[in-house]
Image 1: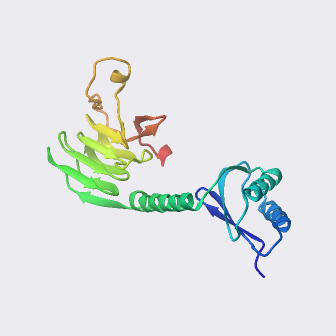
Image 2 (image 1 turned 90 degrees about the vertical axis):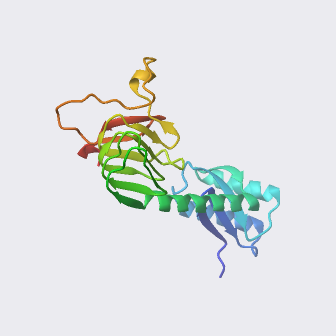
Image 3 (image 1 turned 45 degrees about the vertical axis):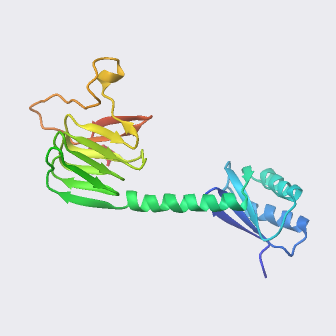
Length: 229
C-alpha cells in the first residue's frame, strides 16, 4: 500500500511526497502524524518546503504549512517551485564536488622553491621544503609546509575561508585565506604599513610551528600546538 506521505530532507529544507489517492483532509492528518513521528528532528528549523505527488491549490499548500507549523517547531519560510528546486540541487551538487576535491584531497610537493617560482594546487597542498621570499604557493584547500614560509601563500583559493595555512616557520610571509589578506597589527593600528607582510622578530629560541586561519573576518596567526589538533 502506498504511504500517505513521505518526508525527504533536501538542502533547502523538506520535500513532501503526497499520496494522490487520499482525500485532502486525510492527507493533512497524515502529514501531522508523520511530523509528530519525526519528533524533534525539525525542531526550531527555518526551512523551505516543496511538494510532489499531487497538484495542490495555493490554499491547500498554505493549509498544509499551517498544520505543520502548528504541530511542530518548524517555521516554513518559502515554497520551493520546480525551477528553484533544480537550482538548489545543482548548487548542492557543486558544493559537494568542491568539498570532495578541496577538503578531502591534497597533493604533495617535495623540495624547496626558488625565488620567482610559483606552485599551485586545485586541492590541498602538503609541501616538504621552503617557500623563500619572491616565491608563491596557492591551493584550493589547506596548505601545510614542512619548512619555512617567507614568500606568498594563499589557501582556499576558490573562496574557502575555512581553509588554513600551517608551516614550521612563518617569517616575512604574505598570507591570504580565501579573499582575506593577513593584515599586520602595525597596519591595523594605523602605524607604518609593511605591505601586508608578516614580520617576526628573530630570536635564538626554537621557532614554534604556526597556523594562520580566519577568525571574525580576519586572518590571525597563532602557535600550532597540540591543543589545536
